Length: 224
Ligand code: HEC
Image (cartoon, rainbow, N blue to C red; front, side, top):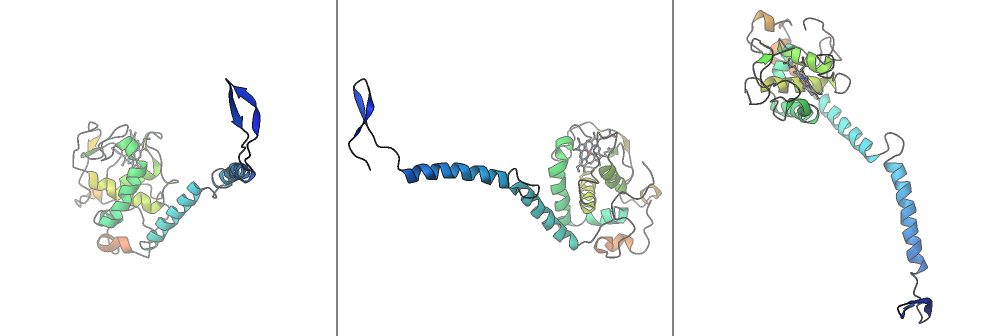
């Protein structure tokens, strides 16, 4: 509909043709704005579970649970953690948990920051390998080390504990050592054997179906 009619204003002698944008263009423009508002309401601010972030989290959690079917419910005992220290692909899961939740305080490689250096041979709260899982699940020092039992799957607690256990002894430069020397994780000494290692334990505890007592990773009392 462009014709040669002029608008009725002129600036410095310059005149302007009256060529408005076509109606269909304007309505698409308005329509896209309306659509974007509706879209944002549904996918970004909508009911819980509907946003893309929520859907991604749910898919991720579902995938992790799917993987966990393979190993059942791990109990946070000595034999299980020692066994998973040897399983590289599951250690990687522990590593991901660590990188996601722990490096802000313990450093990228566990060298320490706000939290203690996890690569040396001394510990403040830990006396045996299952103590690592206990500290992770329940926290320490009035929440300076947060409790993760409600935020991580019990299997994630076991796997990240196994990963943390493998960090020991590298003595990476970082936060200065704090705490007391403790026996090696699997030296067979009485201190490192709070859990009876008869039967199902040591050799293949990881793949067990008949799980032992603990379901939620924060059962047994002893120590700390
Ligand atoms: C908000 C900071 C923070 C985060 C996040 C954090 N920690 Fe800690 N962590 C600490 C502090 C502080 C301590 C030392 C507590 C104390 O003084 O007794 C600690 C202690 C520990 C200990 C015991 C060390 C020892 O010497 O006894 C372990 C094991 C540990 N954290 C593992 C983890 C893991 C695994 C994660 C991730 C799931 C994690 N932490 C996340 C701050 C944190």
